[in-house]
Image 1 (tube, rainbow, N blue to C red):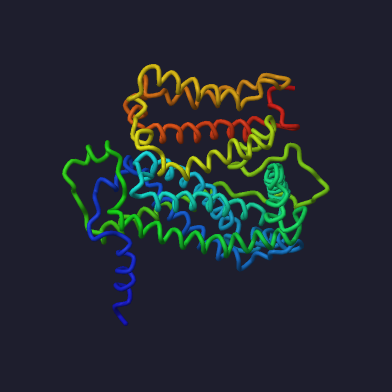
Image 2 (tube, rainbow, N blue to C red):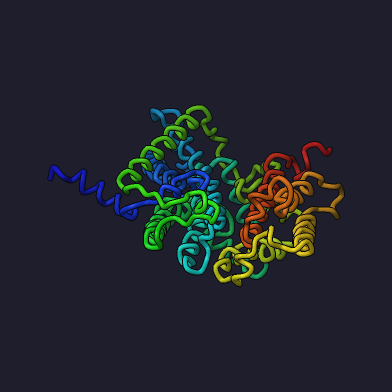
Length: 411
């Protein structure tokens, strides 16, 4: 009985191989995306369970219970802020981790199964954040989810069905709130935890973390470290992440807005920040193009990366001929400009610049970025272009859009 701490420690040690390569512990090699995301998920689980003791998932009690949490529960305001900031940070770290995996070639056919699991974990992260967005039941949450549901409904053919499955009714009601609560607190976390366990198992089964060719070259002789020391290092890093998250929650509490009112429509209405980029595109383009041409193409590209021809997956940007490089740049610039409202009543210069930046700043391996971008396989470069483009469109929608979806500096 007195040996139980050692047994538990031994259980967690087996998440790693007996020896772990030191090169995989460098920030430059992995960006710590997986460890940061896992740490944030643990923080979210703990804080979420604590919040469940106070929260009332009903149309009449949700907003009032959050108000009680913030005004009467000791450290309740900070606890809610900790959960909120951690959830938003996890969306960012999972995106960085996904791109880091692609950079390191973890989508190649020998590791395709774990890549697909990672893609599912990415979409589950977004779903967890989206379902939790409604739970405060204030005006911001209510109308953000309303916009998200209307975006889903705008999809041709399947839109109304998807919206009804999402909300459980034609509009957001107490039924929707309860459905989101169950998904956010039970269904999605269980699926996420199960897939995360398989994901970690496959990493060990596949011989450890995948390193990029550059990281392997810098590593030199294969130096290793015992898994017990690695686990202690991960524990310290998790504690550091927790401390930083607590400090952020203390310094920047999340305000609770007025209670949700379907009769008072804010202007502008914006989806959650990680979906507002799609809302920006929907404002200027047909729903069919955004739903199937943008979202569908992105999902299909992620899932198809392990199945791409070997030449496409291995050919680097710097390895392109001059004609091929100019052709790729012209293609990406054309697609970037096509996602801008050139035909609208004014020239949306910010959106044009942000989208074109994705094709231009990455540089196709030329100029100051040649050393890093030039080594990227074409598939990874295209994935990076997608992320940079979406970040630009999202930035415009979050910071520059005002009433009636107009630019803030244009009357």
